[in-house]
Length: 84
Image 1 (tube, rainbow, N blue to C red):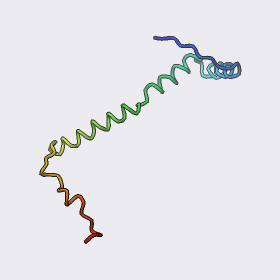
Image 2 (image 1 turned 120 degrees about the vertical axis):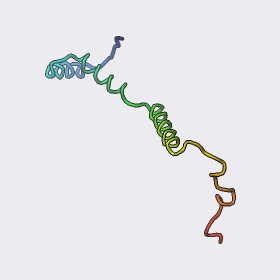
Image 3 (image 1 turned 90 degrees about the vertical axis):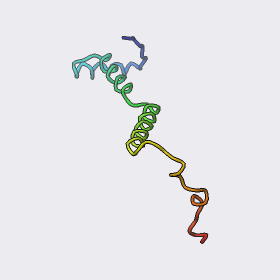
Image 4 (image 1 turned 180 degrees about the horizontal axis):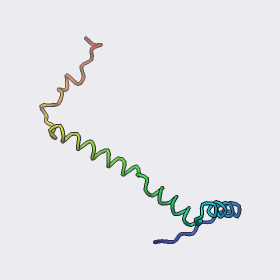
């Protein structure tokens, strides 16, 4: 376990000590819980990786392969009903 040092103003420290006493815990325990909660949140990189894996899983569940024959032709891609 690592120790860290946090500097806060006297009023913040005093109020934190009072609140910790009300909760029958320590300021360190409160700060530890807050940091654990922050560290447990999914990072943006983790969220994107999860979405990537979910997308790949869905593709594989549908047969898992893309084929050139499944793709639209260049002409079909650029068709516009308004130009007809």
